[in-house]
Amino acid sequence: MKRKILISFLVIFLILALIGCVVAPELTTDRFLAEEAVYNYWQAIINRQYELARCCCVFDGFWYNKVDEWEEYININSEGPCSFLIIYFDEFYKPTEIIKDNAVVYARIITDNIVFPCKKMDGLDIDIFEYETKLIKQNYPYGNWELK
Image (tube, rainbow, N blue to C red; front, side, top):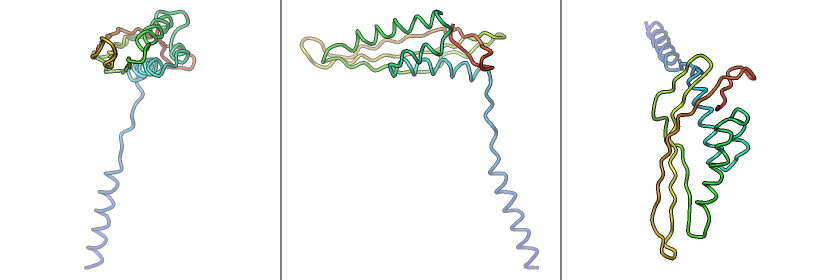
């Protein structure tokens, strides 16, 4: 009798343990890969790795050339001993749209330019940029998305 109860207990314990171990795999969908490409682009710009940001783009495309504008924006707003610029990726503010080998990702970027009390300037200047980012799927390597 004790043996049957012990075996029943162990079987139930094993079943419960195995149920807890089941993890659904995360599927790498086109939506996920397109959003990841846009996120990587903005992380490279935030970290001031401009050549890395260009690697996420189609050569001489809109977003490839936009890197220079952001580099200039960051340099201008970071000048002076009283200024501190923070850039961060906020969110995807709309669902990503995918049509065959093209995608549109909607990204929101926020910049906080903190000006310390130096001379006449003091305060916080916040800019919000909402971008409709267009991407194209490349075949090298397969499934790689690049900003147009």
